[in-house]
Length: 333
Image (cartoon, rainbow, N blue to C red; front, top):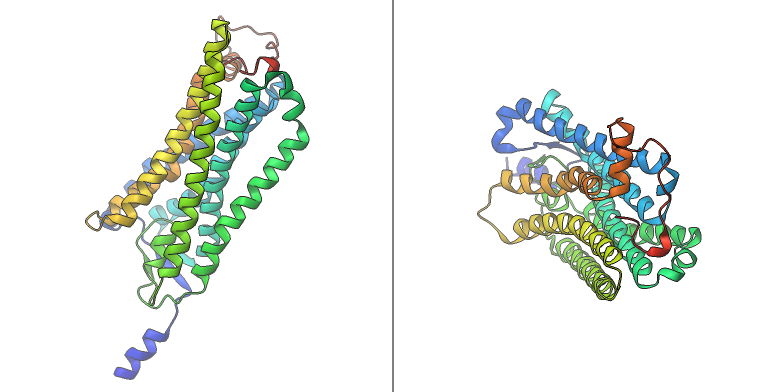
């Protein structure tokens, strides 16, 4: 009997069950409805925004291209998690291999990092546009944009790879049930038998380093933008500059607030139920992707006007939109 128990402890699981929301497992069919609606809304709103930017030549400037890139990342991020979750809720297709789990983990955090990197590029773009408007077209050219995208991909891979690699080297010989709807880092590590202090330290260190750098860069950028905008003598231009900053900062606050809330609660709270952890994870993974295009659509005049024009709303000009003057550095928001 002891030998059998010892043999079982030596087994390392290579397949897992994603339980979703453990406390609501009996109601998993009902959970399908809200998450399916969230997914459809996310795909629709982000898809419309991408279509507007792609088809409207006056929006082919770095700022709007970055907004479209953020929407594309939102679609990829939700598609990494939600389809598997929905299949689990509706048809109990909730088994996943260890390799599949690690791949999903990699792309979850890769997309999160790319999301943050695009926000950094937006901060840089607005800094150049408002603080150095006469040099904007020379600085934010195609070559620079491609360089920034490559740097963003390299940064994302370099931050996510160590976490995924360390997770692939541990043994999962406890339960084979992940009490989560996705292969999040801490949810998967909860099944490890053995010391995972190295995994926790590396994961937390990379996360803290990323957040401190990102928020420092964003604060410095938008601080300089605000000072430059307040010095602009023309009231309309100053208002547009500050409106642009407010829109981007609103998106940044949504992304970082929910991400930090989930991370902090997951690490320091022992009394919070697993379902609460999972709910917080679903909010920071899905909510920003759903509301970001709504924020840009409602607060960005060019995107809003183009959308209303496509619906044939009365009172909206049917001709070509006036191209955005980038030398003003505000994008006409």
